[in-house]
Structures are given as structure tokens and as C-alpha cells.
Amino acid sequence: METGSVKGYRAERLYQHLTTPAAGLAEANRVLAPGGRIVIVDLDYDTVVLDAGDQHTTRTMIRALSDSIVSRWIGRQLRGLLLKAGFSEVEMEVRTQVYTVEAEAAPVLGNFVQAALASGAISGPNADVWLTDLKQRGERGEFFFARPVFLASGRKK
Image (cartoon, rainbow, N blue to C red):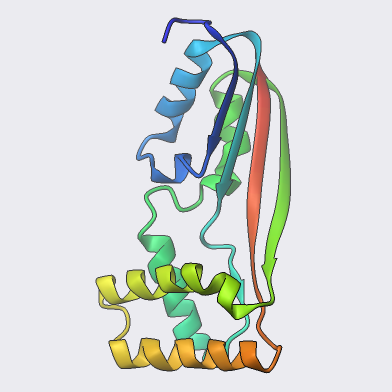
């Protein structure tokens, strides 16, 4: 893309996968026209809240998934990264995704299990017990899982 050729840039859940998010923002800054707007939506994997019976296993699961993400803290870092990249009018919003139905959160819970099993942080039987507890909480109407989603925006000077 040509320098200064776009008026808007949007990335959702991209920067968590970049080893050098600053380089990605530099490229976004390059292609944006003066006054162009940047919007980035991403997560912070150490800010998950999950009500489960086994706190130790839950912490292990959350840590395993977080550790599997290249830029696990990107949500909390976006403001500073945008400022360092030269953007102005930088604003941050945080919206919390709340799940009270276990089946709706099941794909995300599967990611926790997959990461924990892959890293050797937990065994298959322990993962099954953990998932069963969460499913039973769901059946009783007691399931609760929340994660903040960070939205950062700014303008090219």
C-alpha cells in the first residue's frame, strides 16, 4: 500500500499475535493519510475472570492460555504503543464480555484446555474434571466468565 493512502485502519485481535506490535503500528501509521483514524480491538489474556470450583486449576488454565499468546498483554499496552507510534487523540475504551451461559463460552474454555494440555500444565483427566465443574455450574445457572475487550483509537498527526 502507498504511504498516506488510507483514511482508516482497523485491526481486531491481530496485535496479540505479533511479536513486534510496534512494527505493525509503524506500518499502520505509514499507510494512513494525515488525520486518518486507527482503531484496534484486542484482549489482555491475564485479565480473565472465571468462577470455578478449583481455583488452582483455573489459574493454571488461564496462565497456560495467556502464555500461549505472543503479545498476551496487548490490551493494556495499546495506549502507550499508539502514543509511541506518533498517534494523537489516543482514546481507550474497555468493554467486558460477560458469559453466564456455559455453552456460549465453551469454545473459549476449549482454548484454555488446549493450551494447558499442549504446555503440559495439566493432565487430560484434570481438564475433564474442570470442564465438568463448569458445565454443572452452567446447568445450575451459576456459570460466570468475563473478559475485558480493549478498544484503542487515535489519529495520525
